[in-house]
Image (cartoon, rainbow, N blue to C red):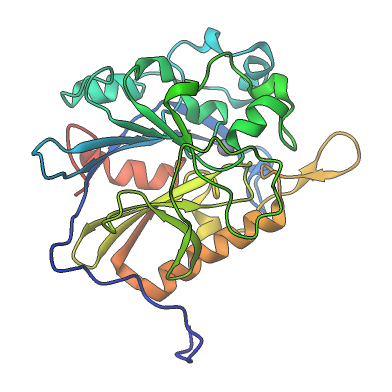
Length: 322
Ligand SMILES: [Zn+2]
Protein backbone atom coordinates (compact mmCIF):
# COMPACT_ATOMS: atom_id res chain seq x y z
CA UNK A 1 0.00 0.00 0.00
CA UNK A 2 1.30 3.48 -0.85
CA UNK A 3 2.40 5.38 2.20
CA UNK A 4 0.02 8.27 2.03
CA UNK A 5 -1.44 10.14 4.93
CA UNK A 6 -4.59 8.10 4.41
CA UNK A 7 -2.99 4.74 5.15
CA UNK A 8 -4.79 2.93 7.95
CA UNK A 9 -2.81 2.73 11.18
CA UNK A 10 -0.92 -0.40 12.09
CA UNK A 11 -2.10 -2.53 14.98
CA UNK A 12 -1.29 -0.88 18.32
CA UNK A 13 2.07 -1.62 20.00
CA UNK A 14 2.07 -3.48 23.31
CA UNK A 15 1.29 -1.50 26.44
CA UNK A 16 3.81 -1.52 29.35
CA UNK A 17 2.15 -4.45 31.12
CA UNK A 18 0.69 -6.03 28.01
CA UNK A 19 -1.24 -9.29 28.38
CA UNK A 20 -0.65 -11.94 25.69
CA UNK A 21 -2.75 -15.03 25.04
CA UNK A 22 -1.67 -18.63 24.47
CA UNK A 23 -3.49 -20.58 21.84
CA UNK A 24 -3.76 -23.96 20.13
CA UNK A 25 -5.68 -25.35 17.20
CA UNK A 26 -8.33 -28.03 17.81
CA UNK A 27 -9.74 -30.62 15.46
CA UNK A 28 -13.46 -30.16 14.91
CA UNK A 29 -14.12 -32.83 12.31
CA UNK A 30 -13.85 -32.72 8.52
CA UNK A 31 -16.22 -31.88 5.67
CA UNK A 32 -15.85 -32.04 1.90
CA UNK A 33 -16.27 -28.89 -0.15
CA UNK A 34 -16.86 -29.08 -3.93
CA UNK A 35 -14.63 -26.43 -5.48
CA UNK A 36 -17.31 -25.18 -7.90
CA UNK A 37 -19.39 -23.79 -5.02
CA UNK A 38 -16.54 -21.90 -3.43
CA UNK A 39 -13.95 -20.48 -5.86
CA UNK A 40 -13.86 -19.01 -9.35
CA UNK A 41 -12.09 -20.94 -12.14
CA UNK A 42 -13.02 -24.14 -10.31
CA UNK A 43 -12.44 -27.66 -11.51
CA UNK A 44 -16.11 -28.77 -11.70
CA UNK A 45 -15.24 -32.26 -10.46
CA UNK A 46 -12.80 -31.33 -7.71
CA UNK A 47 -13.71 -31.49 -4.02
CA UNK A 48 -11.46 -31.12 -1.01
CA UNK A 49 -11.96 -32.74 2.38
CA UNK A 50 -11.16 -29.92 4.76
CA UNK A 51 -10.96 -29.53 8.52
CA UNK A 52 -13.57 -27.56 10.43
CA UNK A 53 -11.02 -26.13 12.82
CA UNK A 54 -11.62 -24.77 16.30
CA UNK A 55 -9.17 -23.00 18.61
CA UNK A 56 -8.41 -22.88 22.32
CA UNK A 57 -7.31 -19.50 23.67
CA UNK A 58 -5.89 -18.95 27.16
CA UNK A 59 -6.19 -15.42 28.48
CA UNK A 60 -4.06 -14.82 31.61
CA UNK A 61 -5.77 -13.29 34.61
CA UNK A 62 -4.34 -11.96 37.84
CA UNK A 63 -5.61 -14.99 39.73
CA UNK A 64 -3.32 -17.57 38.20
CA UNK A 65 -6.08 -19.49 36.49
CA UNK A 66 -6.47 -18.19 32.94
CA UNK A 67 -9.77 -17.56 31.19
CA UNK A 68 -10.16 -20.27 28.58
CA UNK A 69 -12.05 -19.54 25.38
CA UNK A 70 -12.94 -22.02 22.65
CA UNK A 71 -13.48 -20.37 19.28
CA UNK A 72 -15.97 -22.49 17.28
CA UNK A 73 -17.12 -26.00 18.11
CA UNK A 74 -16.88 -27.69 14.68
CA UNK A 75 -19.06 -30.65 13.73
CA UNK A 76 -21.28 -32.71 16.04
CA UNK A 77 -19.75 -36.12 16.71
CA UNK A 78 -23.25 -37.63 16.38
CA UNK A 79 -24.50 -36.55 12.96
CA UNK A 80 -27.99 -37.93 13.68
CA UNK A 81 -28.47 -35.06 16.13
CA UNK A 82 -28.73 -32.56 13.29
CA UNK A 83 -32.17 -31.57 12.08
CA UNK A 84 -33.50 -33.38 8.95
CA UNK A 85 -32.89 -30.45 6.59
CA UNK A 86 -29.31 -30.15 7.82
CA UNK A 87 -28.78 -33.90 7.47
CA UNK A 88 -29.93 -33.61 3.85
CA UNK A 89 -27.43 -30.80 3.27
CA UNK A 90 -24.70 -32.92 4.87
CA UNK A 91 -25.22 -35.54 2.14
CA UNK A 92 -23.78 -32.90 -0.24
CA UNK A 93 -20.65 -32.53 1.88
CA UNK A 94 -19.51 -36.16 1.98
CA UNK A 95 -17.27 -37.53 3.15
CA UNK A 96 -17.85 -35.99 6.58
CA UNK A 97 -15.78 -37.16 9.54
CA UNK A 98 -16.93 -36.11 12.97
CA UNK A 99 -14.07 -37.49 15.05
CA UNK A 100 -12.03 -36.26 16.68
CA UNK A 101 -14.41 -33.47 17.59
CA UNK A 102 -13.66 -30.38 19.66
CA UNK A 103 -14.50 -32.19 22.91
CA UNK A 104 -12.13 -35.08 22.18
CA UNK A 105 -9.46 -32.61 21.10
CA UNK A 106 -9.73 -30.71 24.39
CA UNK A 107 -9.70 -33.91 26.45
CA UNK A 108 -6.57 -35.05 24.61
CA UNK A 109 -4.93 -31.82 25.79
CA UNK A 110 -6.01 -32.38 29.39
CA UNK A 111 -8.97 -29.99 29.40
CA UNK A 112 -12.48 -30.97 30.46
CA UNK A 113 -15.04 -29.06 28.36
CA UNK A 114 -17.56 -29.35 31.20
CA UNK A 115 -15.29 -27.64 33.73
CA UNK A 116 -12.33 -25.90 32.19
CA UNK A 117 -13.81 -23.68 29.47
CA UNK A 118 -15.07 -20.25 30.54
CA UNK A 119 -16.23 -18.98 27.15
CA UNK A 120 -17.31 -20.40 23.81
CA UNK A 121 -17.25 -17.87 20.98
CA UNK A 122 -19.06 -19.05 17.84
CA UNK A 123 -17.95 -17.41 14.60
CA UNK A 124 -21.49 -18.16 13.36
CA UNK A 125 -24.24 -20.75 13.69
CA UNK A 126 -23.77 -22.88 10.58
CA UNK A 127 -23.92 -26.60 11.32
CA UNK A 128 -20.20 -27.18 10.90
CA UNK A 129 -19.33 -24.57 13.55
CA UNK A 130 -21.95 -25.01 16.30
CA UNK A 131 -20.76 -28.47 17.35
CA UNK A 132 -22.22 -29.75 20.58
CA UNK A 133 -22.92 -26.83 22.96
CA UNK A 134 -24.22 -29.28 25.59
CA UNK A 135 -20.62 -30.36 26.17
CA UNK A 136 -20.01 -26.92 27.75
CA UNK A 137 -22.56 -26.67 30.58
CA UNK A 138 -20.60 -24.02 32.47
CA UNK A 139 -19.40 -21.81 29.63
CA UNK A 140 -20.67 -18.42 28.57
CA UNK A 141 -21.48 -18.28 24.84
CA UNK A 142 -20.45 -15.21 22.84
CA UNK A 143 -22.11 -14.58 19.46
CA UNK A 144 -22.27 -11.72 16.97
CA UNK A 145 -25.14 -9.33 16.51
CA UNK A 146 -28.09 -10.87 14.67
CA UNK A 147 -27.34 -14.46 15.66
CA UNK A 148 -30.31 -14.74 18.01
CA UNK A 149 -32.53 -13.13 15.37
CA UNK A 150 -31.66 -15.66 12.66
CA UNK A 151 -31.99 -18.59 15.03
CA UNK A 152 -35.62 -17.55 15.37
CA UNK A 153 -36.33 -16.17 11.93
CA UNK A 154 -33.89 -17.71 9.48
CA UNK A 155 -31.52 -15.83 7.21
CA UNK A 156 -31.01 -15.36 3.48
CA UNK A 157 -30.16 -18.73 1.90
CA UNK A 158 -30.84 -20.42 5.22
CA UNK A 159 -34.49 -21.00 6.05
CA UNK A 160 -35.20 -21.55 9.73
CA UNK A 161 -35.79 -25.27 9.44
CA UNK A 162 -32.26 -25.61 8.17
CA UNK A 163 -30.44 -24.09 11.13
CA UNK A 164 -32.66 -23.84 14.15
CA UNK A 165 -31.86 -26.41 16.73
CA UNK A 166 -33.81 -26.71 19.90
CA UNK A 167 -31.67 -25.11 22.57
CA UNK A 168 -28.58 -24.64 20.41
CA UNK A 169 -27.59 -21.71 22.62
CA UNK A 170 -28.39 -21.59 26.35
CA UNK A 171 -30.43 -18.36 26.79
CA UNK A 172 -29.13 -17.63 30.28
CA UNK A 173 -25.49 -18.12 29.30
CA UNK A 174 -25.46 -16.44 25.87
CA UNK A 175 -24.12 -12.96 25.29
CA UNK A 176 -24.88 -11.40 21.94
CA UNK A 177 -22.66 -8.47 21.01
CA UNK A 178 -24.54 -5.23 20.27
CA UNK A 179 -25.33 -4.07 16.70
CA UNK A 180 -22.42 -2.21 15.10
CA UNK A 181 -22.61 1.61 14.99
CA UNK A 182 -24.79 2.85 12.17
CA UNK A 183 -26.21 -0.61 11.60
CA UNK A 184 -29.63 -0.42 9.99
CA UNK A 185 -30.53 -3.73 11.55
CA UNK A 186 -32.41 -2.31 14.45
CA UNK A 187 -34.71 -5.33 14.23
CA UNK A 188 -31.92 -7.44 15.66
CA UNK A 189 -33.22 -7.57 19.19
CA UNK A 190 -30.20 -7.19 21.40
CA UNK A 191 -29.99 -9.36 24.46
CA UNK A 192 -28.71 -6.41 26.47
CA UNK A 193 -26.24 -8.64 28.28
CA UNK A 194 -23.16 -7.15 26.68
CA UNK A 195 -21.80 -3.75 27.62
CA UNK A 196 -19.09 -3.95 24.98
CA UNK A 197 -18.48 -1.05 22.61
CA UNK A 198 -17.40 -1.37 19.00
CA UNK A 199 -14.27 0.52 17.97
CA UNK A 200 -12.06 0.54 14.89
CA UNK A 201 -8.64 -1.11 14.95
CA UNK A 202 -6.11 -0.73 12.12
CA UNK A 203 -8.10 -1.65 8.97
CA UNK A 204 -10.98 -3.28 10.85
CA UNK A 205 -14.01 -0.98 11.21
CA UNK A 206 -15.62 -2.78 14.14
CA UNK A 207 -13.93 -4.76 16.90
CA UNK A 208 -14.67 -5.36 20.57
CA UNK A 209 -11.78 -5.45 23.04
CA UNK A 210 -13.35 -8.31 24.96
CA UNK A 211 -11.32 -8.18 28.18
CA UNK A 212 -10.38 -4.50 27.85
CA UNK A 213 -6.63 -5.23 27.86
CA UNK A 214 -5.94 -5.30 24.11
CA UNK A 215 -5.30 -9.06 23.93
CA UNK A 216 -8.57 -10.56 22.64
CA UNK A 217 -10.58 -8.75 20.00
CA UNK A 218 -13.86 -10.05 18.59
CA UNK A 219 -14.13 -8.71 15.03
CA UNK A 220 -17.39 -7.95 13.22
CA UNK A 221 -17.05 -9.83 9.91
CA UNK A 222 -20.39 -9.42 8.12
CA UNK A 223 -21.54 -10.99 4.86
CA UNK A 224 -21.28 -14.74 5.34
CA UNK A 225 -24.33 -15.02 7.57
CA UNK A 226 -25.77 -12.57 10.09
CA UNK A 227 -23.72 -12.48 13.25
CA UNK A 228 -20.50 -13.75 11.65
CA UNK A 229 -17.52 -12.72 13.77
CA UNK A 230 -13.77 -13.32 13.63
CA UNK A 231 -11.14 -13.00 16.35
CA UNK A 232 -7.83 -11.18 16.55
CA UNK A 233 -5.48 -12.40 19.28
CA UNK A 234 -2.35 -10.72 20.58
CA UNK A 235 0.05 -13.63 21.08
CA UNK A 236 3.36 -11.80 21.58
CA UNK A 237 5.17 -8.51 21.06
CA UNK A 238 4.32 -7.52 17.45
CA UNK A 239 2.68 -10.89 16.90
CA UNK A 240 -1.02 -11.52 16.23
CA UNK A 241 -3.28 -14.32 15.03
CA UNK A 242 -6.38 -13.55 12.98
CA UNK A 243 -9.07 -16.26 13.04
CA UNK A 244 -11.16 -15.73 9.90
CA UNK A 245 -13.95 -18.29 10.45
CA UNK A 246 -15.88 -18.57 7.17
CA UNK A 247 -14.99 -15.14 5.75
CA UNK A 248 -13.85 -17.39 2.92
CA UNK A 249 -13.53 -21.16 2.57
CA UNK A 250 -10.37 -21.36 0.48
CA UNK A 251 -7.12 -19.61 1.31
CA UNK A 252 -6.65 -18.69 -2.37
CA UNK A 253 -9.50 -16.19 -1.98
CA UNK A 254 -7.61 -14.42 0.80
CA UNK A 255 -4.39 -14.39 -1.22
CA UNK A 256 -6.26 -12.99 -4.23
CA UNK A 257 -5.54 -15.99 -6.46
CA UNK A 258 -9.23 -16.83 -6.80
CA UNK A 259 -12.57 -15.09 -6.36
CA UNK A 260 -15.75 -16.20 -4.62
CA UNK A 261 -17.83 -18.60 -6.73
CA UNK A 262 -21.34 -17.75 -7.81
CA UNK A 263 -23.46 -20.64 -9.03
CA UNK A 264 -27.00 -21.43 -10.17
CA UNK A 265 -29.43 -21.54 -7.27
CA UNK A 266 -31.71 -23.92 -9.18
CA UNK A 267 -34.23 -21.15 -9.87
CA UNK A 268 -32.36 -19.27 -12.58
CA UNK A 269 -30.48 -16.95 -10.24
CA UNK A 270 -26.95 -16.90 -8.98
CA UNK A 271 -26.10 -17.58 -5.36
CA UNK A 272 -22.93 -17.97 -3.33
CA UNK A 273 -22.08 -19.49 0.01
CA UNK A 274 -22.38 -15.99 1.49
CA UNK A 275 -25.77 -14.53 2.41
CA UNK A 276 -24.68 -11.02 1.40
CA UNK A 277 -21.95 -11.29 -1.21
CA UNK A 278 -20.91 -7.61 -1.61
CA UNK A 279 -20.63 -7.28 2.16
CA UNK A 280 -18.66 -10.53 2.37
CA UNK A 281 -16.26 -9.19 -0.29
CA UNK A 282 -15.80 -6.01 1.72
CA UNK A 283 -15.01 -8.02 4.86
CA UNK A 284 -12.33 -10.00 2.99
CA UNK A 285 -10.83 -6.75 1.69
CA UNK A 286 -10.58 -5.39 5.22
CA UNK A 287 -8.69 -8.51 6.31
CA UNK A 288 -6.43 -8.41 3.24
CA UNK A 289 -5.59 -4.79 4.09
CA UNK A 290 -4.90 -5.80 7.71
CA UNK A 291 -2.35 -8.32 6.47
CA UNK A 292 -0.90 -5.83 3.99
CA UNK A 293 -0.55 -3.00 6.50
CA UNK A 294 0.78 -5.17 9.34
CA UNK A 295 2.84 -7.64 7.32
CA UNK A 296 4.30 -10.69 8.99
CA UNK A 297 3.07 -9.62 12.40
CA UNK A 298 -0.34 -11.12 11.55
CA UNK A 299 -0.77 -14.86 11.01
CA UNK A 300 -4.20 -15.64 9.57
CA UNK A 301 -6.17 -18.89 9.62
CA UNK A 302 -9.62 -19.61 8.21
CA UNK A 303 -11.76 -22.42 9.61
CA UNK A 304 -11.48 -24.68 6.56
CA UNK A 305 -7.84 -24.07 5.67
CA UNK A 306 -6.56 -27.49 4.60
CA UNK A 307 -3.05 -26.29 3.78
CA UNK A 308 -2.60 -24.57 7.14
CA UNK A 309 -3.86 -27.65 9.00
CA UNK A 310 -1.56 -29.99 7.10
CA UNK A 311 1.49 -27.80 7.69
CA UNK A 312 0.73 -27.07 11.35
CA UNK A 313 -0.19 -30.42 12.89
CA UNK A 314 2.26 -29.81 15.75
CA UNK A 315 0.27 -26.72 16.71
CA UNK A 316 -2.91 -28.67 17.50
CA UNK A 317 -3.48 -29.63 21.13
CA UNK A 318 -1.65 -31.06 23.01
CA UNK A 319 0.77 -28.83 21.05
CA UNK A 320 0.43 -25.05 21.11
CA UNK A 321 0.59 -22.38 18.42
CA UNK A 322 1.90 -19.74 20.82
ZN1 LIG B 1 -20.46 -21.01 7.34
